Length: 148
Length: 409
Image (cartoon, rainbow over all chains, first blue to last red; front, top):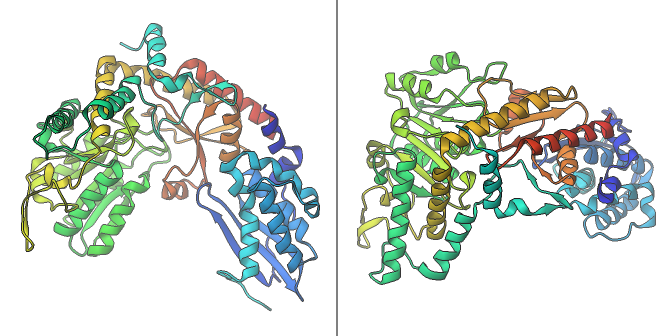
């Protein structure tokens, strides 16, 4: 196995891919948005409970490759109790890390485990699917769900 | 008769790309259903054309234009003979299989289809053999009917028969499924359709470079395929159609080369096939395609078929031994295309890890999203082999799959 591949498929990623955290529907979500990657068939549904500019709770459900599921799982964990402002900043940091190949911003914390994907251009979309879905949800794009 | 070990050594040398390494490993190219590699003869033909013969066809009286025209039309003749068409005039060059199907769908929408008419396709079609018909139906009010598959994914002929009616205006069916590798009983379908005088379009993108073709023996009305899936260049393909249909259908695109006389008010069109070839065609690609066909003819398509069948048997046998792999589609009549899934690893993860071993496969929906829904899978991994592949390469695949199992279990 090449070092690049080992960096991509770390145990944490395989673990989150197989046993995603924050997984399942949410009945009291204020924002629900679907994300779909037509190239791979990865699909997910992101549930957010937002109150006073803070994400009080984030969950998701869906199916896809280990990278997309692990990225959604780690993102959902990260988002708990984050302000909308911080969530948007984190999107930028994450995007910079995997697309622009920048050094991971310290605020990313353990999300930096996904930096290995930057060596695999065809897989970057798997890692960013959850994040793009988040951004669309925060921007109110195609918002299929409801405020309380 | 099959390919010998000596043949294989020479064949592997004939394809320059097979000498390359990927991530430090010898390339194992198992993505031939997406596109095949090109023999030296094809690559050299492109170079020779641009270095010594480049000119437009059917236009100039100058030397180069005559040479280019001659070679372009020679290619049409060679292609006609290769698929046993009655005449080169039955061969229309297109940009590929997709454009050939769009050409027919456009013609049917313009000249044939009425509201409530029906077009029949199967559940295993490529998007290229679905969407043009959806568009034709939207334009005309005709309806699309889908033939079911049996549990082993083979075509349900009983269901197809039950769909045939006076409203049926065309059956469009793949010869070989690009996702499953099924070889469909296309001759039986054509015979069945012709009892009711229903024309049949055969999507032969996956068959032409792999099994012998005789369009007259098949008695099909339309037969469409791409050069790049049969060791030729990208950007070119062909439509074979009977003279009856070529005369009946209207032009697909207007422009230069397809006309006899033009005024600002009207135009008279050329006879087929030129009626369907507007604008400057992909001349270099057509000529290089002919070089690829000659290469196949030298090897012998029957030998290629026999060798690929033995590869397919070995591949299926090896994969069946892996308890963590599930084969998608178990019909016995199959070519060397196999779709599979792993009990935990997603096809895209498999493809990335196999790539790390130098093995190129495809993962995803293979441009057959409706089939994926039909089979209740999100995606599959697909290995598609051809005559330059070897049993040793299958063993490399199996070793890599075992490593994936170790990583993901």
